[in-house]
Length: 462
Image (cartoon, rainbow, N blue to C red; front, side, top):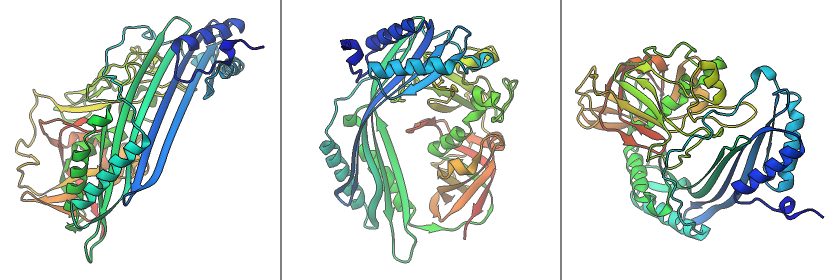
């Protein structure tokens, strides 16, 4: 008869029980070095269509990645969604077998910061809601949005989601991390059509840690205002223009080329930067870019990464100079640096940004001080949202060609652009910035001001 620990279901992550099981199975297998990252999430989401439920979903996901080091310092890795004691035992045995094929020359190590004190982050968990409550909220939001203008006929894409997430990191040297958070989000994408004109569409998204504080009203207003502004549209000529990127659009562009700041991408040869690029001027001197996973506006912030390293705010570009890179334990060793808290955990440890923040260097001046979205009379293109990021960006070459939603602005009046594509080289864009506005605006993906760039190629579509 199996004992109660072996039969016990882990369910909601239990660090103490997981730790005890891993110690037990590693001792039985004569493994002295191991680590484990686990996550659990519970989600409910709803979609509606013309006042009726379109899709209702609920899910519970568990996952675990286990690494073991054998006596030759070869590493074996297994992943599983079976977080029962038997599932963990199988994962241990599988990792031990896999370690026989590990590469001694490329062996990862524990993060030297896996037991360092963690920064406090806002991890207030909201009270859960029923799927019927979410459905009622979204139905009401859909109706309000359609009622804002006679030309808005539907909200074909929408969703309201509530999630609860946990993360654990444990290793054989005593590291023991555990954190929970909640997150709610709403997405509204509406369509409008006027007689003898093409259908037009626009959307908005909001995220918050608590459903009660999710700003649904502003999401409705933003979606409606954008959509109404796109009803009057025209085509534009192919040419080079003065461009203003909205905060959302500029963050989309920087995120698409985040491999510039990624030490893993540099090692793999798929980044514009090189190992010795630190200290190089890569943009105009008044641009700052940082990654701030600990920013209070980042509602999805975890206080540690997949390797147990504390999440850190990192200055990536300071006064236009590449200052730091994002590191895992392995890349930090190769660069002679410290892990930055941006690593995943897997067969090949990945590195990715958390929460990009763009700002202006106060000590530096703009090339054109008079530019402002509130009062500029010059003709310019206002780019609001980029599309086809995955297919239109060649990150390792620095080039991009992306369809966009936006307006041509003349004498302060906005006219929607029928269809057009923006193209260029990211380093040229960063070096052709003529104005970074002072006000930083919080978006669902980071923080940025409006950013103005001259001589950008726009291809109009007839």
